[in-house]
Image 1 (cartoon, rainbow, N blue to C red):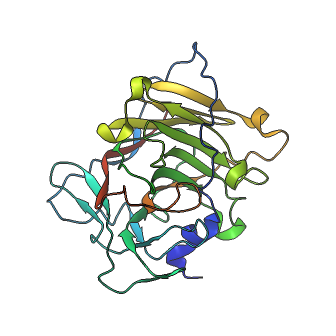
Image 2: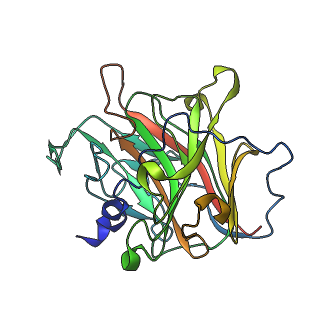
Length: 282
């Protein structure tokens, strides 16, 4: 198993299968956390159009992902992940295979990109947020998430996984936040969904997705609206593995167990546009 696919291959369905429509009633008395005290990581994605991401902050994963049955090949460099010259990172999913990439199912049908901060930045606690515009269409699966930095030693799901935002194309108005750990992984992840009011669609504009993370507690919000809080009490006696360093991941998958594959209604290219990623103390 090559190192560059460590996170990909260890997830074994890591960002899969939170049941559609999962929900948890928000506490009306809970407000998003106050302004952070200090920024520990920030990427505003400022740079020339077409340039790649800052290699001091991100590494690019390459390859396919059989575990989730995703259809894309994640490419290197700036082929599918590049700055747009207007302060955004654009991860582009294309229906193409110019280099004859091979996937678990044969010749790959799509390309996309996946970035992580492993070996470059980790955080234990704080506010982790990104302002993102998601793509649209059946089979699209954008995600902003985190993995325990000890995944290389303990494997997944013992490493723990925090999904800050996932969207599947057949739910254009809903995103999900989920925890995965030992005994509560894959379709057994502990999570909830957040749905925009009035039929609005997440792909129509930017939204801010965040967690506020402290010892034995994680709170999710969208645009400052808190929709779920999780503590060890939610795990039914199973192990809470979130009091340790985690690294960040951004990716745009195409197809897979949860979103299903693209169909005739899906248009390409599709783009995941990221205005910024910030981590701060709270």
